[in-house]
Image 1: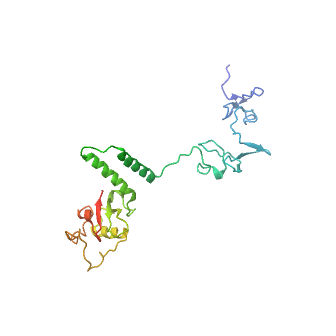
Image 2: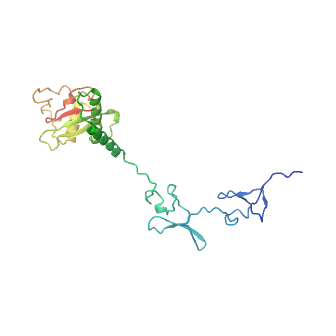
Image 3: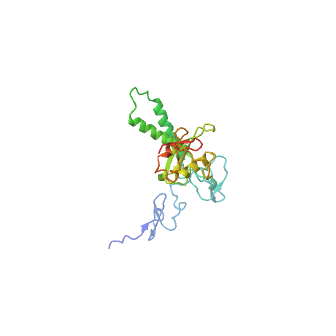
Length: 252
């Protein structure tokens, strides 16, 4: 009568005991009985311990390999990237200056680098003999808009879909010639004037009832009083928004 295939024999030749619940070593994948289940008892040929492991006083300690650190841990703390032992204080990649650490560039720095590459590539091109087409103008406008967005000041809480960008030309007596800004397309012209004056630290008399209403320019004297309730998206006068001779250039 054939024997039933129940249990496994211990791989130790001197033992060869049949165990109904055998133990499989995770290191060498051998099958062992209860008595020989540990690595020491079956003299496991696979040693899964790094050279840095030192055994003293019958206890195993794992020293930190970071520079002059003398910290030790009872359990291995191995970096999954460089495969070295570290103490709890140096377990993260940043803490032990991991050689496998990939430094990610900030989003703004990457954008600035992209803009700089585009500008340099345009400078390296030979001057065109023929007239510039619409494609070159569109590319230049995109580059100008990207540069404007990098430095534009405004309400950071505004959604990107509601922002419109301007390069505000400041009065000649000011220290800055221009200042990039962005506003909400749903704001009225009056609110845009107030906000622009606040960002540029200009004197603003819009809240004074008897104050003179700003005009488009000193030569045409076009009155803005009838447009101060229009939104940015509804009026074309924002192209020449004047407050103390202050003008705008729209890039959106």
